[in-house]
Length: 283
Image 1 (cartoon, rainbow, N blue to C red):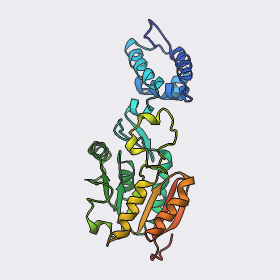
Image 2: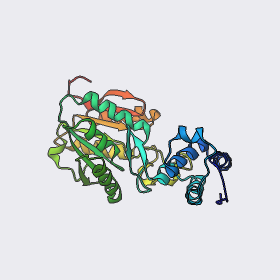
Image 3: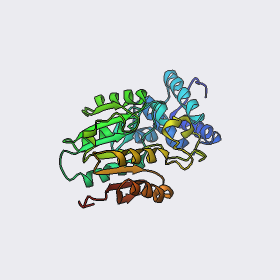
Image 4: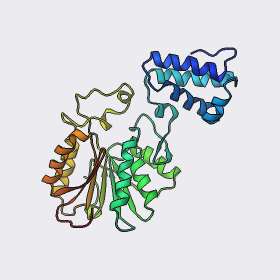
């Protein structure tokens, strides 16, 4: 889409929706409106009420660049360099997986099981830091540790923690390898590990995200097997382990957790909550 001498918001929307539709983008209208909001600094209702607004040359240039990237199936969050999670805006880039709405359920369950006001929470595979930071802000008395194997992810998480004023600790670690043993005792683990089977056909936008954060082996559960194997052998064990996986994977994940001495306490959508089999606390 090349800049024109004069184009209105209404004309831009019509041409952009058509362009994105041809590219196979089902959310073309919404995407165009979101990018208009960002570039013009006006909310959606105002734009739709004034379709006659004329775009400046500078605005057209910026929008054309963004729309071309979206037509190539780049995730909207990467184009905007931000996304919303649990009512807060997080910075994201192509180094991290975009936080998904289904992961918000993990925070809901965390708040339900955190029976004391100062739990220790460990976010395993933190990525953008969305889960760790949200946990800290929703449970201000908690001690939150965010770990990731990728320093680029930790840099993004640190940036988000600073911007959202969430004092969390960041550790580079392959799963729990570098986490002090004493930290794990009675902790709550938030584990949104890669769980997509290697042969699963993901959509074109997801293909632009880091493969390391998406695929988890032939059945998608390799990293969860490693995680629970580590927990099984550890002297200090967490009180709860929350996991995210596709519902058809839940039975197998339940078996993996049971083999490590953890039983299913709660399941909701993509999230399962496991607790120590010897723990008789309320679920």
